[in-house]
Length: 92
Image (cartoon, rainbow, N blue to C red; front, side):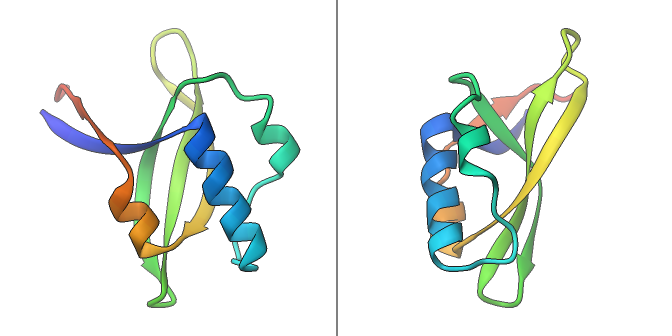
């Protein structure tokens, strides 16, 4: 088993509002976020960025087999990243 951090629709919208308000390099179109379903959106990749934030790649789509088909990038504070919930996934 491995743990994966994720956003809910609400936490993604909130984190994006912070990114826009604080003029971070990576943010999303807020109106597009409103159209997302109420699901868990896993963080697929993460790295420290500029020593002051985390840059995360968030999976926002998959096909019926679970294959990744879409992702977005968002810059968030370290505290936001650390506070994200985790889900356990079975190893393949």
